[in-house]
Image (cartoon, rainbow, N blue to C red; front, side):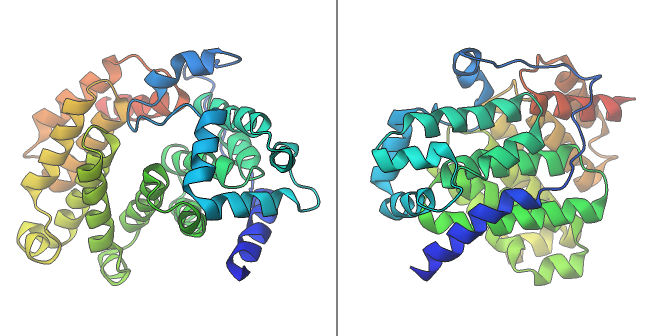
Length: 316
C-alpha cells in the first residue's frame, strides 16, 4: 500500500516538473498522424519493437495480466484532479484511456516530445510508457548539453524503476529502463561507469531481452551499443573476462539488428557510432557505408528524421 501511495503522488506531480524542451527542428520533415492515420501507420512506426496498437483490448489485457497495475490505476483515478481518461476507469470504460494514450504516441511521432511527456504522465502507467519514451528520445536526439542529458536520462531511469514493479516482464518498459542506463553510462567517465554497477547488468538485461524477443531489432542494437561502450573503456580482453563483451560480439549484435530491420535509421546511426568508438580508423569505410545508407532511407516519424539528420551531419 505504501508503494501505491508513493507512486500515486509521483504521477500526480511528475508532469508539472517538465521544463521547456528543445523544439523539433522545423527544417526537418514534418509528420501528421491525426485521426486514423496513426493506426494505419502503426506497424511501420513500431518496426523496432512490434508494440501492439494501444486500444481497449490491449489495456483490458494489461489490467488483467497485472493486477497491481489495475489496482494502482484505479487508485490514481480516485484522486482529486485525476485526468478524465483515468476517471473513466471507475466506470469500467477503457476507451478514453486508450484514446488519450494514442494521442501521446501521436504527439511523440510528430516530434512534440514535451507535449507527449506532459500528457502521458497524467495518464498513470498507461501513458507513462510512451511519455518516458518521448523523454528518452528527446534527451538522446535533441538535447546537446551533457549535464542536461544526464539529468534527463537519470530522471527517466528513476521513473522507469518506479513503473516496472506494476507490470513485471513488460518488455518495452524494461527496454526503456536499460536504454536510459546505457545512455547514462555513455556520459560517465570510466571510473564512475564501472562503479555504477550498471555496466554488466545493463548488458545482461539487453542480452536477455534479445533472447526473449529474437524478432525485435532494437534490443540487439541496444546490446551492441553497450558492448561497444564496454570495449572502448576496458578493451576486448578485460571486457570479455569481466562483462562478456567483445568487439566482435558488439558488431554481431548490430548485424543481427540490421538483418531484422534494414529500414530503421536508428540502427545505422547507432551502429556507425559504435564502430567509431571501437576503432574509427579500422572501420572508416564501413562507417561511411552505414551513414550513406541511413540518409537514403525513407523516414516516417520525427524520431527517425532526427536519427537520419545525425547520419547526414556525420557525412559532411
